[in-house]
Amino acid sequence: MALSRREQLLARALETLNAIAKASGQVGDVQRVESGDAVLLTWSSVGQVGYAGIDRLPDADPRFALFLTKAPYTTLGEVVTASRFASESGVSDGNLTELAAPFGAVVRTSATSPIDVITDVSGLSHLFVRQGNGYSAASNSPQVLSALEPRGFDDEALQGFSIMGHFDSDRSGFADVRKIPAAHRARLQKGLLTVVRYSTENMNPAGGSDQQLIKDGSVILRQLVGAAVTAHPEPLVLELSGGLDSRAILAAMTPDMRANSRALTLGEPGEIDWELATGIARTFGIPHDFIDMRGLSRLTPEQAWQLVYRSAVNHEVQSRPIATGVLDWVEGQISHGPRFNGNNGEYASGRYYAFQRSGAVTRGRVERLARWWIFANDLADPWIFKSGVLESAREATVSRMETEFRGYNADWFRTTDDHYTYSRMQRWCGSDFSASAHQRPILAPFFCSPYLEWARRLSPDQKRMARVFSGMLQNLNPDLAEVYIRTGSQKPWMTPRDYYERRAITRGRIGIEFFGAVSRKGLQRLRPGTDTPPAGGPSLTALVRQHWIENPSLLEPIGHIEWIDQDAMLSISTGTRIPSTSTVSVLTNLIAMRDIEGTYAKS
Image (tube, rainbow, N blue to C red; front, side):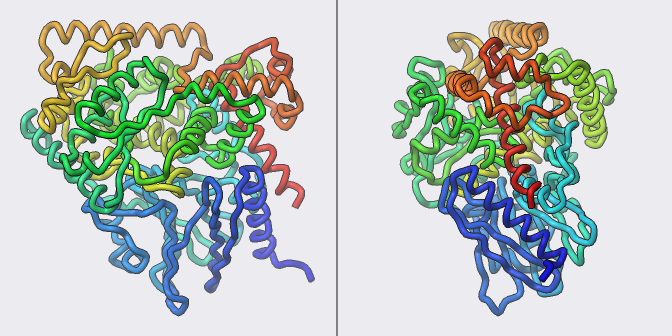
């Protein structure tokens, strides 16, 4: 008997899930839940990463709540349960805004209600949707959605990834498959898809004096850290570096919280992060775990390739698999308890203010920012592209960025801040959070609504070089404000207190640091492909390059991509040219995409 179209689509989805599981070395079950015109496939994995874990309500209850992040909670410290969430009040706009990021869920509040697919206020939980002919679909796997009706890859988006190190806007790399934006919900009902904003955040709050903002920020950060601890009473881990953001979380902890916590640092002995974090942990009496990244060099080329390839698959080819491969390796060395992450404290730090003047968004400003800062860090080697591709990719990406920037309806400084959080950070570290959140609670206070609203109150001068942020840290814990922080220098020479007080000597040192950063960016512009690999990245990259030389057929799946230079692929496989870390990440993603595509193209 011939299968109906719906059954054919579901069969493709299931086949793709199995292909992903096989490619990533996972073991798991697919469960199917049906009601009316809705079908829900859930993947429960006992491997490294699960695609979904369902919190079931009683069978007689037509409601359901499927959480895609482990142990969700609110910024008030309340644990989110299925019975509470799967109600009209549970999915109200105000309650959704209070959810702590990262958060992702699929929910239906009654038998006749639409299915809502919800991401958090910062868009960290990567959830994707597709409107097909007579159906609508959503998944945290863009590969599954692409398999329903294959339309190929989104070459423009993939080229943009190749020069930025992440996807921009709502692109996924697959044609017709889109990511749900930050603070939005997708509604699926009777084959139709609508995507609407739910946030009740104040996007233009009133400002305040330095002292008032320092006081308010201190209260908010204490509240957010306390909420995470209340909702997760088990021992917590703080990812501690030598920078400002993780230190601010530590400053917001009470002595009792610190006594029930451990610190975790990645790097190599003797590095600045190692020295500073070790000193802080010793001073505050916190047990300190250090993951020595030199252990990566003990992997064989085959092991390194399997680590990076599986990371690409596990992260749904939305990440830089060298960077996430390093993190996957780290996760194999440690336990999977709740862990504080300090990313996005920079939202209050004037990320792109250097050499900038306030004013309106213009094409010229967007292009200069992109070429000087955004395209510099993770640009793949220009020689891997066919002639003209890199130039057209830059133009197309700048055009999309201009559209994004104008959509913020704000001045230039505020727009660059919003771009950093709602585009770069959402796609850059969100891809890792989306995969990791299946195995452990991620506590990310700087992505939660109260912090974002507070940061929006700061003026450009208060944000610039983390002045008020540093004052907040000093207010929370003066002792931590006296400890040097990591800067661009080989030896740190400034403290958070220095950043806040801005004495003449400090301004001079900040100037030196700034011109050092500009010089590094200038070098990257003069020598494209001079990327900034993550800790452990160079070792892993070298091993993968060696494996490709030993197994040149691995590059064959991307041999017919029209915008990739085939002579460049030959030079990589023979070892005559050395690709950068960013290039290895881009090519690994393309190989993984081609492999999965080959599976469902046969169905």
